[in-house]
Length: 284
Ligand SMILES: [Zn+2]
Image 1: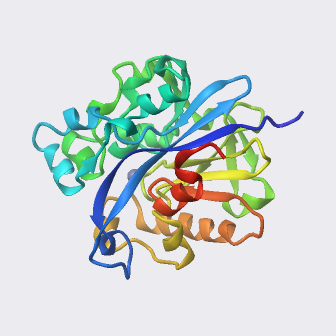
Image 2: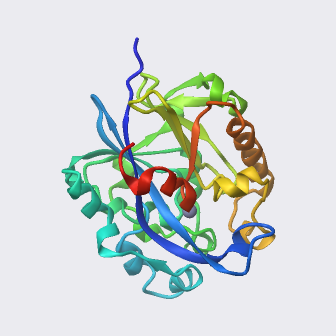
């Protein structure tokens, strides 16, 4: 069986600002931009797939009341009209109803804010993450960056759990991370657990149309610079994490796979450098 190759666009749907030294040990006090990046993957038979949705205007509605407004205050977000994901998809000739799947890396607000815009998409998530989010109280969720108002009301009817897919040994470039889940059963899209930032965070890996292996690593590291220099997030930033030790293990696994010559291209969800590397969201 030939493994299908996917077309890939790396898109920016808004950003927030933080002092660099909060997100990265040894960082500067200077406020830096954290883009909210998401992927459009086009599978030859499964169609249009999103990896996360970045910010959307639903985030403003969800953070209107107290105490949710604290989220907006602590991580002020900016979303230019041309960065609205549905607008960017329309520019590519794709309507929001044409999105067949959204892979949810984890349930933090900056990754799921656009879910309500894709009413026909199946929602692919780890069961661990889903169960964790379902068990959180309103305040407990907020403390961990989760806003239940961002979930579509029919989420439970559209959910697909990655754990129900076939488990497989990861390809050589990613073998340091152990096993993953073959989402469509054709090895085209592999979900890889990257716990610690949240309980059930997943990344995905696939081969692009030019045969290059891509690995979308979500928030398992915040930038390639931090990974390269072994700069873990500060204690302050880690408070949002579900398990700091698991985060460190996932981070170490990424460091191992990032040093393999001609290995996978790692793309963290908030890495400005990686976004620029892929030509500002143009198809590469
Ligand atoms: Zn994030």
